[in-house]
Amino acid sequence: MRLDLTKRSDYAIRAMLALAMIRGRLLSSRRIAEQMHIPPRFLPQIMGDLTRAGLVIAHPGRAGGYQLADDSHATTLLRVIEAVEGDPHRRICVMRGTPCGADGECGVHTIFFSAEEALLDQLASATLGGVIDTAEAAEAAKAAEPAAVN
Image (cartoon, rainbow, N blue to C red; front, side, top):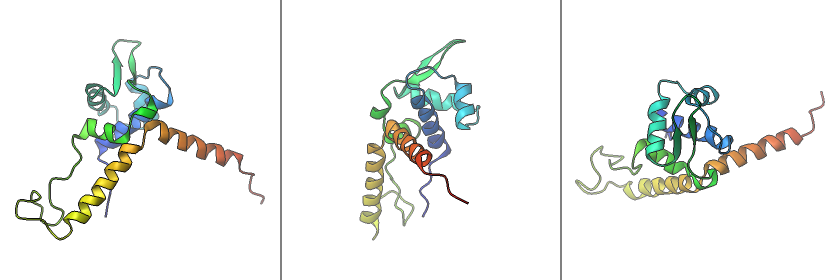
């Protein structure tokens, strides 16, 4: 079973992490694309979605750029995904490929929908700031480890 993000969600999360890491300063779309390895042609659409959703503030102009609208610890991964994908709730039966409930529920309906809710709960509790804090703590722990003796 695969639990992959779409490219839109992947790029949106990467862009938001880039903005969260600079802590309130402006970052141009070119720099976001370079730092986060996002194809530059996709970034304007992604940033437009994030701006319309109120997650990002756009500062137009030559010296402009983007910055987070809220503190990184207040912005969840679910909000970022919803900004570029819309409502993430499944509407199609995993077994039948038709709208759920159209001809009853399949045998695994409850199990899959419970799993989906658990995933959405995890994404709703994970913040950009938390992701960065965890990565920085892992880097610090790795740096503190004694060098391996050959």
